[in-house]
Amino acid sequence: MEHQNDEIEIDLMEILYVIRSKIVMIILTAMIFGITSGLVTHYMVTPKYSSTSSIYVLANSDVSSISITDLQIGKSLTSDYVQMIQSRTVLENVISNLNMGDELTYQGLLGCISISNPSDTRILNLTVTYDDPRIAKELVDELAEESIERISDIMVTKAHIYEKGYIKSRPVSPNVRKNIIIAFIIGFIFAVGIVIVINLMDDTIHSPEDVEKYLNLNTLAAIPVSEDSEVQIRKDDRKRRGRGSRKQFKKNKKRS
Image: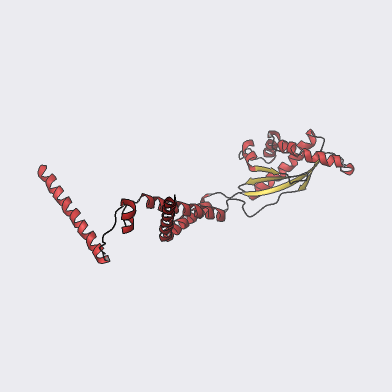
């Protein structure tokens, strides 16, 4: 068991050493991923803008005679209000009132809407996200108006607009910085993974230690090779390959 642990530790150290030796390539790959993501996000992804309107719902239509029970009932019915606001009747009325039948459908508008209810409140925040900030504001304001009418008609409650939407000049998505950071991390992990896989698949003997480790043989001697000698060895190898190719070409020519 102790011997196996030593081998695992040595393998991990080798992998860390390989990663360290390739760190420049790994960082460059991660930067390429990040830059590419930033360019794609900036030039090819349509920005989205949001606008939020808030409505306040009570269980008693008479605001002057509100009781604690009315407040509790209003709070407990917020999930019902959310379903009414997202109903087909309300959304189709919003589209019709704004003359956007050619641009939006019920399903399309439903996908642009998000509703939140802050804890311990009877306030519903209606948010519409759209390609145009001006249209986003118009949609959310009209949605608030239609929702108040719908809630007042169906439920024994009274709703009021607490805050109207406003035009935001800064898009809520896409987040260029976030996408660049995520792509950089993915590129870094991808490059490290490739380096590790190549290292694990490399069964070439590089050192006397590899001979002992993989072949269980002791190294008797080692012949040092200078850089000039390595260059000459490569040249001789190319020459041998070239001569072999020429001989094979002559044989094929004679046969033909």
